[in-house]
Length: 283
Ligand code: NAD
Image (tube, rainbow, N blue to C red; front, side):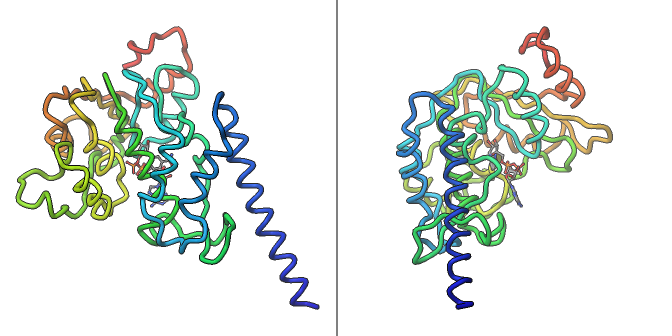
């Protein structure tokens, strides 16, 4: 009897987990008009359901990108690294920029955890591997895949908010892909074949998605400029003169203009709070 009760309780908890997660997914999704959210859910779920949660490759989300493609929003696209709160504090109040978290897939999954299990049709929200616990976990592979898709459509003047509160604001620190060894450049891949780009997934082992996944996908044929905003808090550790930003310039596809501006965090907050300040005059 005890075993039956445990099994029933466990079954109900797991089902509840699934339905709660799915209803959050669908209710967030339905804010985007003209979207078949059930179709997006199906494409999402197939990536990780019935799989070992440490064996979900980045490519598993390819059908999801096909089901919910990213639209280019030229001159408004905002990338970030280590500045999540300040960026979103600003973009929530002002309409100047679009971050990945403002897009359908980014907003639906932001802040959520999920995974599947071998031999189960369920979606679980507890007992899932942590971000760094294993390389190919469902959450990390998802963010890597959709960050790449967002960067692939970036166009016009692109902005990136980086942090002056860390020693190395641009930090790819990953092993070189075989195709790059001897190239003399730290990272580059805009001119690589697609098959080689696929291989880069397997070697981009660090946490820094901006440096290792987004910047390397910026294409000069689509992007005019990359404008870095260095967010400076009190006692900042780095600014636009930081040597790591030289690596960023060298990594950029030839033809993309680079600029960098040191901006106090307080100015970004002020601009968020004052709609009378034009977007272009914020920094
Ligand atoms: P970052 O190092 O600030 O990491 C971005 C986010 O990834 C963090 O806010 C966190 O949610 C998650 N993350 C990273 N390392 C983690 C860890 N060790 N444990 C738990 N969570 C961890 O910046 P980044 O790696 O350069 O990525 C930022 C860029 O990639 C942005 O342009 C953004 O569009 C995209 N991105 C967004 C998210 C998100 O959660 N919304 C996650 C990853 C990447």
